[in-house]
Length: 340
Image (cartoon, rainbow, N blue to C red; front, side):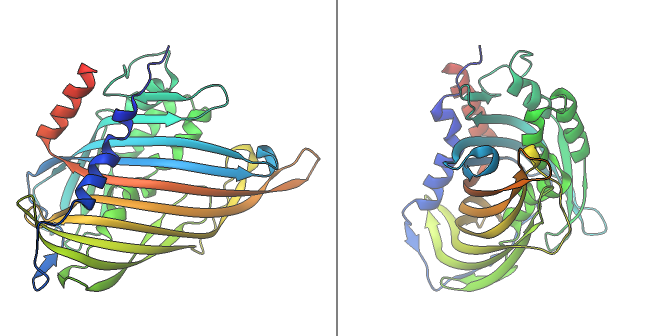
């Protein structure tokens, strides 16, 4: 029988991020300006926790007129190592998967897995079978001096390892999109790197940014951000910059048309996101990011009659958090998980 993933463990990343971002400022300096850009220090090592809590409401077609609400959670932790910069000014960032956790509501019963708690080699646990092969897998992201990704490698190996382990079944269909090269690049790099203005900023200053949120099922989504500096100063002895942002979402003009499960083809009606991020001046990077995202979609699915279709509507609400964790903090997490 699959062991239960404790709520304390599931929500750990989100709790850390929320506490760091919402902490009361200790010493503000509204007259100061700070260069807000990433520092790529060769040899730097830390862990990046990514946590997504998702609630989806779907109505019509397979889901019925009353609709179905589903909840899920995905947590991924990767060890991030900055390699020595090359002569062409590119820097290689290595990401090694160190923890995978997942929760899903199903018709039968909720299923949970956390590699810090559960056995990732358990052949009876379908989540362990599918997610376990990610552990220890490594991907490389080469970025230029402006933080733009110029090359990735190793992502296909992760994709094929999970596909083979999950035997291409329903569980793999739910994991497939996050394992593609465009999606991993967005999730592990672009989703926070796009927020850097690469200039000195002061409290109250605003700027615009953009990124592409890719999909294998529907058209890619253009994210347009308006960012604002909310605070510069010391917090718990560390100099930080807090920013807030809002983003609007709209579909791009690509021609993707791959249907989801059950023949469902969806398009984005509208979407928006609101978030905050904290930049550690000494480390030269965003160390926390929290975001609330809402996407409303509409589309069609196959109906019982030959050639017939039904209208489907979905609303997806996601609470995302990113937190940078030191090696010492990561060891403490593992120890706490083993003691429970």
